[in-house]
Length: 382
Image (cartoon, rainbow, N blue to C red; front, side):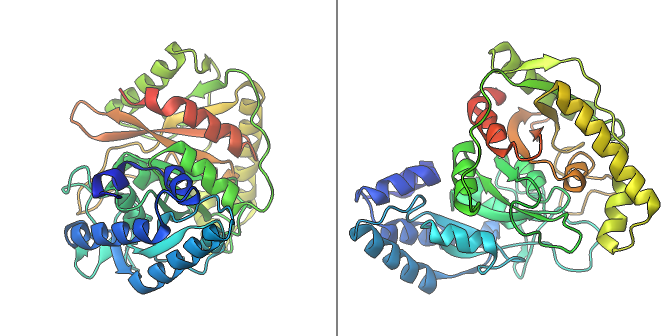
């Protein structure tokens, strides 16, 4: 019997293994996910809608396929879908083809606001499962909250400036943005990449295999070389946040899982170029900024396999917003450059606030990035 406690402890790959081997049915898993969501989401407000009927119908189809001997890599895995992309997006269709069962739409910010690090529902704002006084981040707010609360093991998101990585960091989970272009962008500028939120890096790797049409390359062997920067050369990062992320990286290095290299990481603030591209008004200054950062990153990746930063320059803010702080300061440079990026839980500040360790890899080194995350994630959090 699949208890609520057992379900919440299972990863997406655990669930698929159980369903593919006939130890539990997709219908049973989905019924458990729906029941937990109905019970707990009244207070959490991660979902804007639950799709019980369609989820049960799809779960029955998964069970029938498995009974016919079809192997589905994510058989019976309940997923939450970012409301702004919907169930018909490319990544969600490919996840369904791999056996996933969407159970509902998750909250995003309401239109017309200047800050996007929160989620809105008709019942009020989405709460952070770690502390209801905090925002869960955004814009993939409900997806992060649903995964962190154990309602689903995997949720889809989209990341135009950090919208997968920021909520993952603030909810203490994994957030992964693939190399731009691996999946169709969700905006004309090509900044907004589909992405995923999970509790385990292995589930993010399973997601990548499911949504990319070709097999990813085998990760390079050896100990990754990592260049650390708390600011990227321009961000006003809180010392407590920088210190927590740095300590996580040093724990990983002391365990022999990476080698730190003394390589400065100095980029130009991407804000003007990002804003111009998003508005559809790029000019020569936009091109010059993008080219300068591309050249700088090329040089860094000649000496290092990964760049490490805090995921955000400050801890989660309250539901009244971040004020003048730029939550995206350390993430949106890599929407502009297109590099794959991932956040790991890195522990908490002295005040108990969650911090993410942000890892960035070379273009199309997504698998190597995920392999490092899988190796490191138990060590990153004290």
